[in-house]
Length: 112
Image (cartoon, rainbow, N blue to C red; front, top):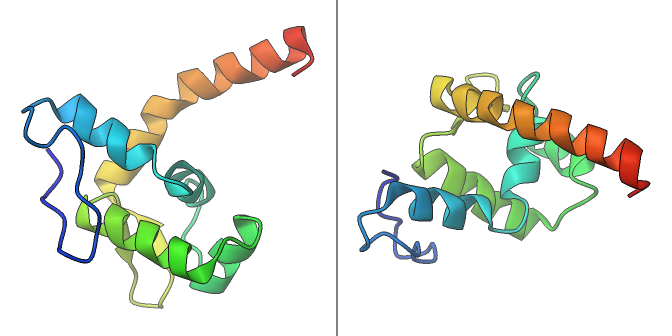
């Protein structure tokens, strides 16, 4: 289960329920969380490169999401200053791949 967030982060729904899936879905449902994980799936990125990859997301919101994802153990700050996925973060991204493939098939059939 994700660690309890600090006082500067918003509380995580589902934390008291004892259901890890609820905690994870709350974290991933926050604006830019999934996009950050997706953009980091291939290689670490600096803050600036990550912001560019995220369509110029607000630096404040981007930093808040990075803090949340770091606290959860999915993202780490590398020695060179860039953000990258931890082993747990890479594992999480691998679980997205079947959904990504499904979405691609769905888009091609539905014209979405």
